[in-house]
Length: 87
Image (cartoon, rainbow, N blue to C red; front, side, top):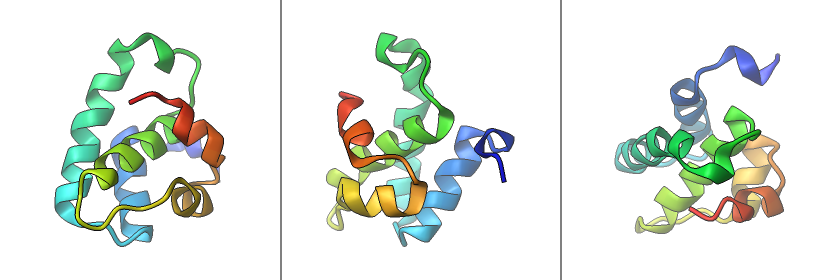
């Protein structure tokens, strides 16, 4: 199924569910994702890579952080790409 059929919000919801992240982490990831289009590094990036980066950043601030590798396994976004986002 093409990832472009999903909005970033739906992608975040799906990935947070797969990663068993709390609603608080999902809420924070959504806040981060809403700011991403205003940043220059987001140009040319896929929705799923931006969602993965937002989830990574939000989860790192939680008491149950996920590694970039864990997020890669669920999102199919390479670990290096997740870490390159500079969020």
